[in-house]
Image (cartoon, rainbow, N blue to C red; front, side, top):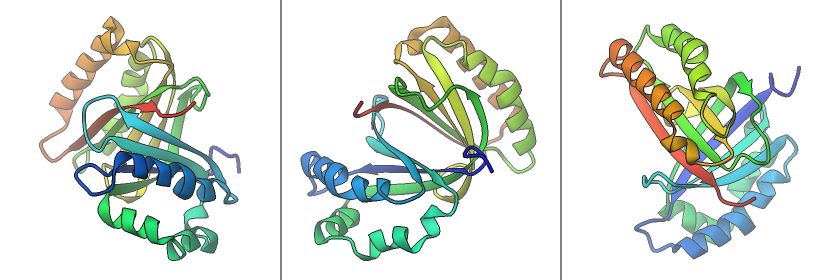
Length: 215
């Protein structure tokens, strides 16, 4: 089995806003206590932290690419059982939501080091519309999005556990200049038109624009 076939994603949104945990303490904990032991586990491929540049909350996110089954191992579960007093306190205070995914498809060349900005776009179509949504996204929408300036690639995912909509795509960009481009406007108009015609009020949609925190 190839790495892509076995690839899984853990995506976590979190935010200490409106709690007694300061941003400084939150980042110190995340960078120096929370993240390192996870990346040391066998089967974790990467862990990247992001900050929102879309003005929405939560303001921070982390994406962990890993091998299937890692989150069910004793070694991973031990990180929660043996957490420090500070980590227990922070977990109890901050906003946090976790989503787990399996890979559906890869487009372009995602995973490059020069990917500075991502668009996190997640949708749960209404019952019965899933096949049409996936076909439209791959065959019509991605060909338009890939024309955006600075677009590097994308991966599409299907949720296996946790919060959030059922289907996720993460588009990777070198920069955020695409947001004012005519190509972006064309892709956005197409998406609004298709979803307006084909998705009803029970569909769930999320969209975030996030910037890599560290190079």
